[in-house]
Length: 590
Image (cartoon, rainbow, N blue to C red; front, side, top):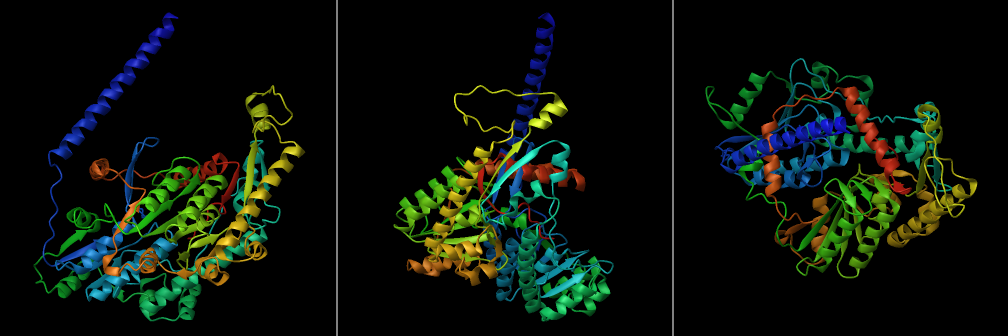
């Protein structure tokens, strides 16, 4: 006992000291911020807005502290990007934009919306020049919107076509003696979220749907590039298949870029556009600095508005959510508050989700059903509005999607791991249960009985029937038709439009304008109020300042990042509700 108290006291003292140090550091940093450590940003005349896209971009901007990783997570949203580029468009001090892009870590629909915002900037008559030492396909897709595109003389463009790679866990689970007990909707042959746990490669149905939607995304990408660069889609495909753009010479020869320049030559070209002398300095201002300079005038949300934008981003879960997850309680409350706000005339639900809990999806669906009777609801789909994401969208008055949005995935599955053998054979741990009835406990530490499997199968089929019925009612289709295009199949926005799953192709801005027109609000009179409402941005400002103080951090190895990412995705699927309406597992378009 004496030894116990000895070590306990030492541990307790260490904890107290650690907390004390943390508090002192935190107080010091906050005091530095409060005392004006951060100098105000001033924009000089004849400036160039520099955008490098070296940040994560979501639908809505937020900054948060993750207590699990002790990292500050910052997302620079499309909402903020749109407002800042529009501000720069009208700002007399900003003469043009330099896109310094090599790698763009966004999903396809987000990239398209960012590109559309930049395309609109060009209507001001101001220039956009793109330049990089190298460009991946996403970076080139964004860069191609520029008036002129230049590469470093020894650089290259990754212009090869799209692909997606899935990771399968079946063999690993077998070695660990884990049996994934999977129940899909009886005819949900395209519901491939479960495939990584029961197979070692794609099923023919999964390969078919993936090739279909990445083909649609690639064609849309080529169409946009072709319009900007005045190159046919056929020619662009030929360039990709022949690897003609992998060298700077080939990229110039086939008109993907306008030339090659060293950094000093690029600056000389910019000085020429800005009418500067050779010895004069170019006033570059980074996007985040421009944001700080305009933090009072570039608001993305009003305290009161006539158009409510309700953001629904991430996995759908029961209970409370946050900026990165759609909680049924949080999202339903946001929709309800927008409905009960008399100044709000119409609601736009911005959905960016692969789905999740079927029950949580139904809670949100019901709130939209009630709201439609009071004021119109328009849905704007982002990168994903699949499975549960489509469930919460299907009964809106109008649905907008981007051509490269992934949607549909109308299907349901249940999954319970049986880890009995793993604990028994690898760890020597056994389990025993006392119960009052035959089915008192369905546990991951024993195999399910035939009756229990049949029960879950019935529940999965019942929920799938409810899903297809609600889609049929919302989209004014027959249940048989919805089932024929459902069965878990994912579609890109272009195909979803043809099938009647969405009504129009367009951005969030297009959806907002349509919604405003529905209730006779003129475009110039639109005032957006964003939900869920953020009560106070003081903490966010402190976290943003802390992020600036962090500087460069050591990055994890590629392999480490990969396994952490896959582990997190696996955990989301396994730890979610037993019955889920979720899109196929981890589709990464490269």
